[in-house]
Length: 433
Image (cartoon, rainbow, N blue to C red):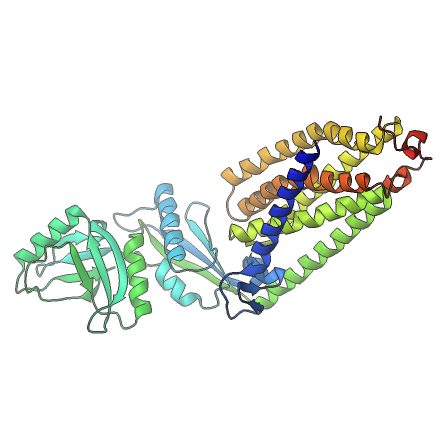
């Protein structure tokens, strides 16, 4: 039993340390504020986790799908457009965007930290229909024949987009170039000519380059459009709203203040009611916060106001779990058992209740994750992660700390565990019952 407890303590310590170092250390030095050490950069907690639009500001964009000849708006086409827009934004390297469908035709895009939305709109809003046409104006290949595209600088120090065709596309391109030696082939994007070179010889390698980009950034945007594919419907920008950092900072300050006040009140309540056990619960609560934030940092999750609400709710379950354990512990002491025996029995009796409560809430969180979107999904994910961490801190951390307090023999008076009654005779003698 003693060896098993030691192993549990070691596992708990390792998890806590891993979470702490994940949270406050970044392996790559950056321009952001922090203490640079040989093995990484120490950052304050608020700077170590990505923050959403409502906390750090950014850009809110509303797109609407439009009917065009041959491309009517359907639910399936809008869903595919959402997927393509999300892919384009991810390839642009923007931090944790939110892309979701709203109603039948609208797509909501949120870009946290993005203060210059024009370039983003230029990339995500383009239909990006690519065509290869001969001199007669006949379309011989389309973007569907492309396998991949990558921006690069050629030997002449020009910014180009290197493209590679699919097997079928490579054959089509070889036939097209072989049939048009000495003639021009136009490469168009949304009807605009990107380049119009003269074919000198048949190209059979299944690869080509598109010139005409003035900068490497422009070539990168073109490559993103080609990789993501054409939108199934035309998207019109209906609204662009920039949320300033001051508004986000105000929400952040209020959230931090509410979080701090709530934590302090909970800690004070636990100490007043449960004394030593309350101190144990508070230590476990601090461990809970460190582990959960460490997990969020490791998963590169974005912290939003709904996400904070999910964390606070799961924190309530962590506190409830400790209260259940301590109440069962007190009941066992009141019937005359020793502190150590009461602690073991109390944890066993409380475990099933804690498990049932957490499982029922976890089911609801999973449903929200699967059925919800955007802020609802963020709330559900943080709630689910918080529930898992709260189970660990209540069952392992609280138990280990309480066991240590009792085994030291320094505090044996039940009054220090929230029991206002005289110390039993068998506890004075150190007997186990």
